[in-house]
Image (cartoon, rainbow, N blue to C red):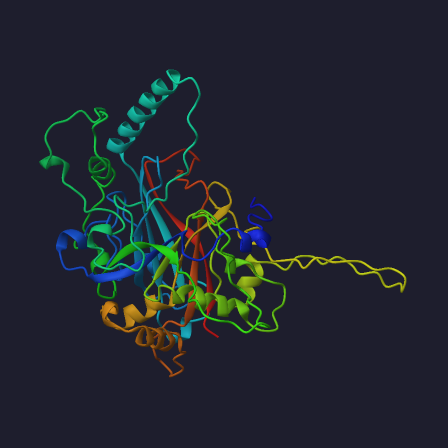
Length: 439
């Protein structure tokens, strides 16, 4: 079962400062997908378009049907996201219904995880594991454990607020093994490059949907989804009145680190004003073109103080105050903590759900404008475009998504089990989605 509390944010204000990168990877639009090779490559992440499936058994077409109106939904985005040191190719697909009558109903946004065993990469991992075990025997003391890498790790460091990210798409184009020279898949010498490692992981990751019923599915024009690290810039320097009080800002005392949680993700227990939405807009304002936030096992960024917020960030219990006149008691202000205890476990392996990613309001704007070039917008134009995308369309029979953010929670074990509970070579699993709607 899920743990009752996964992260206590009470100390986050002291953990990270401005001018730092976080662990969150941002997905941003990077131009229309035009080549057939990229359109059918499951290792190329995209916004919109038709799904490019892993070459295992095809996902049932009913998987993209809205649970409200039963009509097929458009693909909102597809993300190539294999786990580090896993032999499984992995991709995440999110569909959404744009019919106005389906908004605010459970099942109008659905997410599926596709897995396929990659024998070539599995052999490489086993060879690497054997080699590392032999090296450790010759070392007097074991090396320090390395932090788990993000599945979206790039060959080169991603630059904050950078564009022209065609070479930093979530994954590389697949290659045809038949065109490669004969080679022992277990042969991986020390001189092997990162390029060959990524080629092995995407070697069998493309397939076509042109000959299936998916070819007739509705869809938006496909747009590349590129990645960059989230960067919290330094606040502008300015003179403040002597009696001014700074709130909701991270301390810049040198104790910050990239792996820490951002300061504004500590929520007080007062909901007199929607400071949750205020913090949401401040956070995404640093990179307004973001369409996706990805942080496997991290903490979602809530959109507003609604029922979903209460579910994920439950109010802490308060200590009782004495009622007698002669007693005094100091009660510390408590903060909300992120918890997945209320989320249903994975139906296949019963393990806890973990946050993986969330869709952002600018995704609606990108889909609505059919591959508009976000890079040409000024900051003011981009803010207005996002605000317009969040406006509710109330005309009867109209189409338009109304959510503020869609959070995807995946199986913590990334399981791939058959009907008998044994490991399978390929599978499709629907993941849990929580939607915060635009009020």
